[in-house]
Image 1 (cartoon, rainbow, N blue to C red):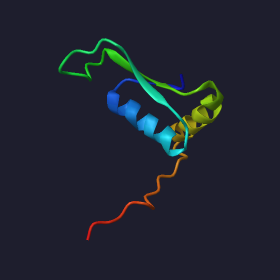
Image 2: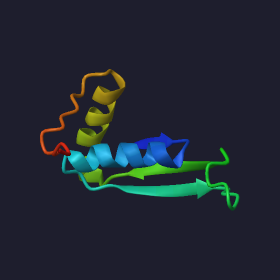
Image 3: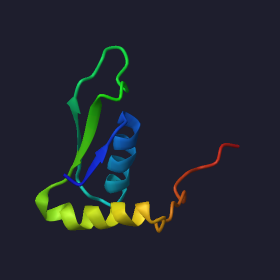
Image 4: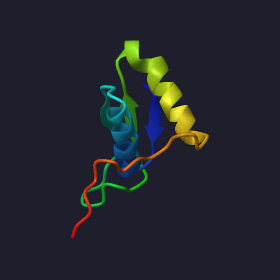
Length: 80
């Protein structure tokens, strides 16, 4: 496990950050989920990576916490 998120969206953001770096990941929900309110605050999103990717994934997430990651939108096309 590389991170714990308290909201579904936060888990998705962390997972996409890892995917953008080419790292495999899985976001797994643990805890109580109340239908129809998935963000009840009683569940956790566990962000998992394979053991051989753990150090690289942790370094990437740590850099994000320190504000050292650059977000680039090179591939985004602007609408005319």
